[in-house]
Image (cartoon, rainbow, N blue to C red):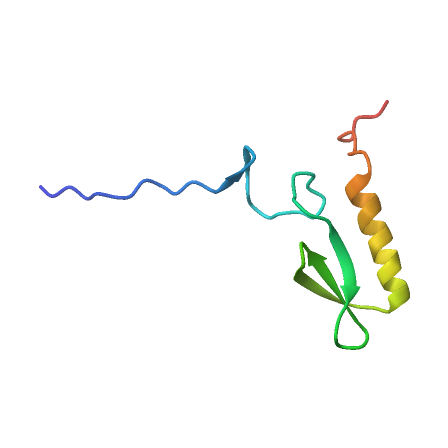
Length: 86
């Protein structure tokens, strides 16, 4: 009889005790602050996280200020109460 050896199933990577699936910009343990910056192409904005571009978005300088305001509010607001009504 031959025994088939299989590797143990790989575990998902964990970050600070949580499974690291899809990271979120709203995650409070995320290091660094995301912000919208200008791109070298006119009419495009770039979403940066720790000086790394992670997304492109069409927009103007006015949109850039609005995006940064929203990102700040979303990252620094109190979390929802989980749907529990008071």
